[in-house]
Length: 351
Image 1 (cartoon, one colour):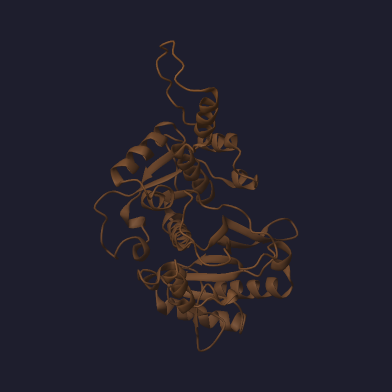
Image 2: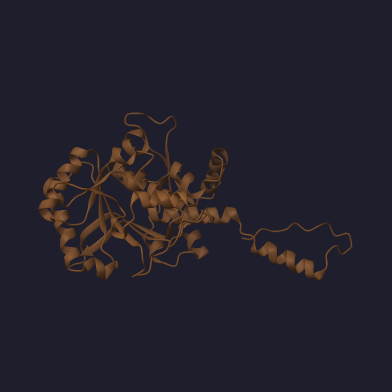
């Protein structure tokens, strides 16, 4: 869809030369339709994250819109049956990352997701080079979207971490490309049964040089090329304190074995960094003890939910500790590429 210049009424007089008419047509054709781009961006995000709270959609897709305009725009997309919406009980909200613990939101939060019509619309746009994105996309009925409430709190924590990371990366001006796969099956067994599944895989590539101001309304969805510099894979693991410690020991062993055998290098081109999020620091310490037993000196970092709430650190820098060392050391998401907080902050000042 292109923007159209409304013609003047036909008075019989030629008010423009042919050259001017050609230039006007070219300028009109090249003018992007912001509404269309924004709609694409919304559906591309939902195709990857399954469902997203409205506040994250506002921050990631339409931050330039005033709140009233945003809700009017979102309502319009919903009325086209491209997306579904569903209110969520505040008890299912991930307390530490979404609202202050025990504080009920003033308005009932709404989740939004992709409908079959929305997926078809996105396919017709031809913007996804990776056909797997639409094949993996989970759609729900527009009128009665069914959500598994027993899994909702866990899934919302996964979505919340991914959305916060995307927002912080995007506005840092450092993001060259990004891709996310929810429930990523990293390895399968002899009969194609999953052997390992990340809660989410986030693959990013950082832009070279100094960060630049964000000029595009679109997130740079794309798989980073193998061997590209500053290419990182984060394997997100959300722990809600319900899994037995022996299960966590098994996870550490699985990460160790798949790393040592070169499986990740063969499938992803880089070894992922396990990123474990826990409800409390006590739980983080329990997991760290199991990890040291299963993979001493191995890869992996952990942080509790409250450590990710601080506005000065957020998800990208929020109080992570190593998993494979005793005693645990301070760690970041960026240790593989040698970026320190001081380096990051200095480059922010250069913007």
